Length: 256
Image (cartoon, rainbow, N blue to C red):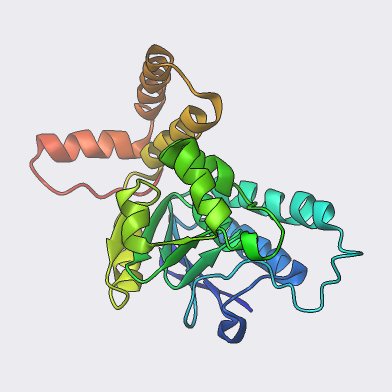
């Protein structure tokens, strides 16, 4: 269901249940968290997440779930939310290639990833109008922040799904690409990041998380940037970057 391979300094995590569009049950969520733990232990410098088959992730696997007895609070609060937090805090740049269905928890996986490239044929949004349920996994926060209240509720009430092109035009994700190109473009981006200045990237990743979570004011963010620059001065990559610039050569970063 969840495959992990490591090539050089890049981890590749694949949702591999195409017969159900990579819908996730409790075991799959646990396995996905284990894959991220293993990738972190391996010390990778970038990670790619993608789905096998016709879609990225159709959300929760509700086959056999009895709504009368389903512990939805436990499922979301004890499994989904901690997983998304783990993914968001992964100590290296993370990239996702999204195509086909990106719904519910599948949308949450994208929200918890640093950079998301989407296929023009992707379907993104809230399918819950037909289920009597509500959008979860961070969808409300993302939509409200990027789309505003009116468009967010219009999408939710109608159960309308956005295309990859519309999602990128609305500022939800990074780039839209033809479906045949999105995986390779994502892997190329991760490979570039894996040979970059990892500590510098992590400083930016953590600051962006604070801007999102704490809504830092401009000059508070500038103060954090200043402290980050001072801390990076003591890293090997900072010294290498300066030396390479002065010597007019390409830097060779080690991630330290």
